[in-house]
Amino acid sequence: MEENKNTNPELAPADSVRAVLVAVIRDGQEPRQTEEFLDELEFLAETADIRSVRRFTQRLPQPSSRIYVGPGKLEEIAAFCSDNEIDVAIFDDELSPSQTRNIEKALPCRILDRTRLILDIFMSRAQTAYAKTQVQLANYEYMLPRLSGLWTHLERQRGGTGTRGGAGEREIETDRRIIRNRIAKLKEDLRKIDRQMAVQRSNRGQLVRVALVGYTNVGKSTLMNLISKSEVFAENKLFATLDTTVRKVVFDNLPFLLSDTVGFIRKLPTELIESFKSTLDEVREADLLLHVVDISHPRFEEQIAVVKQTLQEIGAGDKPVFLVFNKIDAYTYVRKDEDDLTPATRENLSLDDLRRSWMAQTESPCIFLSARTRTNIEKFRSDLYGMVREIHAGRYPFNNFLY
Image 1 (cartoon, rainbow, N blue to C red):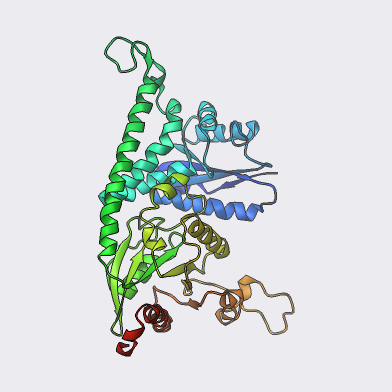
Image 2: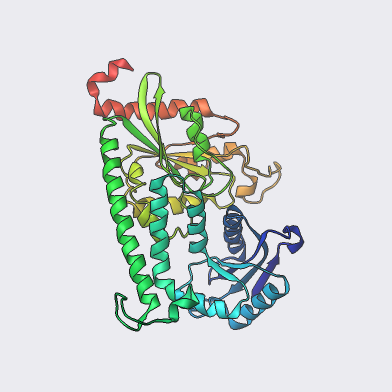
């Protein structure tokens, strides 16, 4: 019941950081689904400039509380890492401090779990002081319970006088105190910035607010650029956008505010959700959410569910939603012959079929488009204008004659 996937180590440049990916296939979970999860983990690694050379999976009822996988599988991973000069092993779950310590004793390379990898990506991509403060806070909160495994020198005794805790204070206790103080300072800094941002939002008047939300790398920033005619950074990598960007948009003399926010992802670290809640105020205070979906992704239905769950967690689950199915130019399907009587599957549904599918029958209005090729953009602008106008008319009933 164990599966390995070799992604050809020869394809990795000699000077690149080489990694193996490790995941547990839980009961009731299909191996194909696990491979798709590992595809996402590999994309995360690539975003962090890490090249995956092999995958290791094992079916277990649940991950081992000691070493995540079974002892035999861990020995197999260790042997491969030793024989192939692997730099890092990346696990597709957040490891507990004890799991990390036990695995580090067995493997001859560095250990990263999914949370640590995402935090590293956020740290490398944070640009503004606000984003950097948020990521630093999340990083310290992740580090605090794991200090004993981060540096071997932490287990030494700090003797002598003049230390805050007196003679014999363990150095790890001092480091914990330092990190707790930094966490308190970062939280206070964020509170100050939050107050400033709240004032900025209140100064925008009562313009209708529209927020782009969605899974990471679904094309939100590209759509933002198209609608607002701005130059928000967009890249085919995960978490290209960390800071909330707000632009004033005018459709036929009707102004509204459009914001682009950080993308969501499966197993988004709790530390990041907590730290970025203030950034997501733009989502909570929005009048309308544009939920952008990458229809070309093989499991876009699950991505929709992840976004809906995250919106509930941040208190925005009751907002009006306009579902935007993006990247129809990248959607592929196999057309069925007329005499093919087998049941239709997602692979052989045309886009016309999709327009008549469950997606178009949901309570939320939806549209199919491509921001990259500008397919169906005019219809999208028209629909969005109608929704914004309706919200504006409810807020200012006596101004309707202007539009």
